[in-house]
Amino acid sequence: MTDLTQELARAATMLDLGRYDEASSLLARVVSAEPGSSRAWCLFARAHLGADRYQAAVDAANRAAAIEPTEEWPHRLASNALMHLGSHAEALRAASESRRLAPSYWQTHVCVAQAALAASQPALAATAAAEARRLAPNEPDVHFLSGKVALARGDLDGAREHQERALALDPVHSGAMNELGRIRLRRHDTAGAIRHFISAARATPGEHIYSRNIDVVILRTVSRMIYIFVLIALILLWVPAVAHVDRFPFAVGFGVLAVGIVVSFLVMVLRLPREARRLVGRTLRTRRVAAALAVAVGGVAVAFAAVAFVPSAELPQTLPVAIIITIAARIAATARLRSPLGKNQQGSPAGRPPGGPAGGAAGGPAGGPAGGTAGGNRAGSPTRR
Image (cartoon, rainbow, N blue to C red):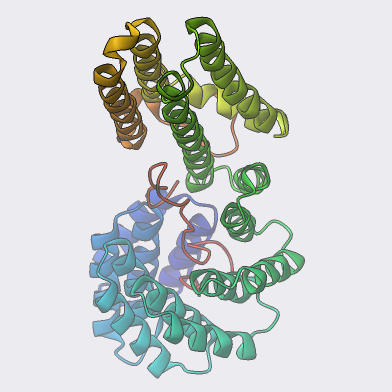
């Protein structure tokens, strides 16, 4: 029994250090020798969670629950893994069972709030988060989760207050930094959002979700710039038909439009920290962004050329074609930005310079940055005991 205790202590230390594969190897031997140890199976589930082996985590947690039916920890672990598998209703049932078994543990209420959010039940999530705050008002993960609940309900001020409280309790809470970035993004503060994502990536270099969130914001900004560029171009295309201007002023208008968009983007980039500027440059050099920009600019240029050089008598027939080309260019460029990243287009690990990305996937440029779970395997998190 002493040997088992020592082996489990070693495994727990490995998990706290993020050495999930080493812990898995050790725990595989432990559960083979001691299959009746519920704690060993729970630690095994934690190891699988850390290594993104979610179905294996569910299986290990279920083994632990079968050994000790009155223990709440296996149900929390199973709930976390089931959320990653997209089984939100099952995750909520597992979380509710953990809360039923241990209603005085703040971790069980946080687990219910997480699962309720994933299951699109914000009212239940808010109730569970409030109970967690009552039980553990000084736990940073409780305020982090409460902020996520508030953000999901559209309460940006409340979300910001909770995340700032989490950071006051734990100044290196990367999840709270990431959430503040998402809140900034909701307020259309792109530069501020990227600063928070950069801080989160620096605080937790091994968590790739934060740097991929930076990529998402950059891609969203590029997509917005393309939209504005095409929208103004569509307006300018009507100028020759309405005002009958000469070709030279028309060409100047196109040039001013292109330069204005580029300058606006550069001003935004210059407001960013140096590390973020490197990330912007890296993203702009990826194949899909370069292709999207080429399609948008090329399509608009072709449309402008068609309108500028066609005889005035043919302008009524040419203008609709030019408009269709412009709209098609915008659709194609946006589709290219939303395409999945190729192997050679992945971002760098969080917090590292280019060359040298987040969690659930961060989503495409039209989607929002990922928020992650309340702490994962870090100390004090709902999956830890």
